[in-house]
Image (cartoon, rainbow over all chains, first blue to last red):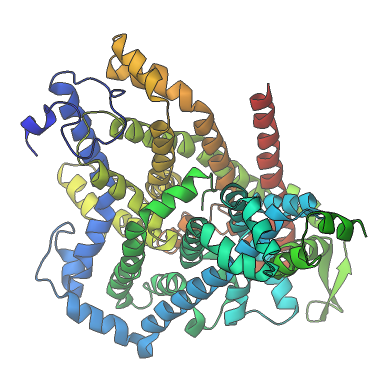
Length: 304
Length: 302
């Protein structure tokens, strides 16, 4: 990046495609340079730990503690990866698969249930509809961590803890998904279209499946993504539900390694490399599906 | 049978259709989300007693509000609430200021590489809290950290994991994770501002600073306040970051935050007390959020 780029006339770049005119006019060179320097410093802060993780994942055990952390020393990423996946009878691969199972199944089922419920609350009028909707909305305001412990106590009383179901069942409930599906259906599905379908003799289910799902699919992708990442990142729920380390999702697995480092220092490097591996698929999905995130954020979702 | 009549008037062929769509969500929702809350309330009104001395058979008996009295006189629990509120009151405004500043900078004409900056700043939100805390934990740990390494060379010996600093080291992890998320929300609000207002201000000679502070910020202030208050309420659930850092420092106790306190009670098999603390956390968060929503909707109506 050169100074001449900073002093280009407004809208000279392709990126400046916002409706013209309402931007600040260029004010000399110092302002723009300062703006970009501050932005670069900020971006540096946000990328620094990730950069450290990438560098550290390539190091040997002695280098990890003795060499300078922000630069590579005789990289051996593939040896580290091989060791990571072979440790404790391939338990790390199992953790990744478990995370995929919890997040994939939880998000697909959760999105489907939310879509149907949101549709029902949007297009039909029946007694108790608003009360049910208020109950669902109210549950968004109860923090997930405050819910997880009561869930554990209830699941323990019926002997459901320490099983795949103990993490999966709570994951298929997305009150936020119902909310988003309802408001999106109200906005995107014209009543006339439903009426036309009924006049043509289509069943309610067929109308939902062939017409409505297609119209609200942008909202559903957003619900799916939030649900998927929410489950993938969840820590408290699996922590209290699971004891058998073969059922752990990757977050809990890494935590269990981290808490054993003082007894088994070998696990330090594996925790570092494992953290790196656990982030890669998520960051890729995330960045490639950005526009759906923005759709969800704009509708006022809650902090995760 | 008003339902059928109304349905027929609306030419809905099948009166059970609304429930066919709703129940697959509603039944698990009631069983998995709502019923446990009721069960926790019941448990919070009980206690476990051992009949016949220390090694007797544990039995559950009704205890009324005994567990709640215990919670309100539990200095560790009260301290944990005060700690997270202090945390929220400091960390949330700092995070919001960082998010606002970055959004305003990205909204200026001069900013370059906007897409890259947005992605890089938002990326931490996609990183699991456990991994974020692990990474920062390594960067705080003097044995591994290149940061303490570099600072040590210029004669500064930071103690990120020490008793005085650990709360703010946790705050740094949380800020790092969520600042980008808030930045994206604020940035979207800025992008949605009416162009003619900004253009008029610009023509009237408002410089970039005045434009940002006197025109843009007041216009998006409601969104800022809403996000900030919900974030402060959210700090009541603070758990993952301190729980992970707990493994590398002794300065995080088993009652460091309200949620860690309830988790510790559960792992000690003190289920009634764990239930009591969860109920308290849920009720306080709900009342704060709900009350705040009511207040803001009244503002908007006025």
